[in-house]
Length: 60
Image (cartoon, rainbow, N blue to C red; front, side):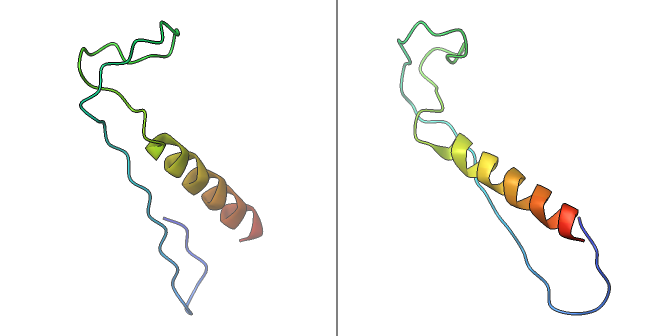
């Protein structure tokens, strides 16, 4: 939680979940759990949230 005194409040949200999809890419970062993978882009949502949070913290 970032705080900057009284005033307007901004809330950012990102979601991360897994889909019932078997990942067969063979890549080193592929899901290690059979039948479950993060292939729908939600990891990008979290990355964007972290980037926005970093910018806000630097502007604080």
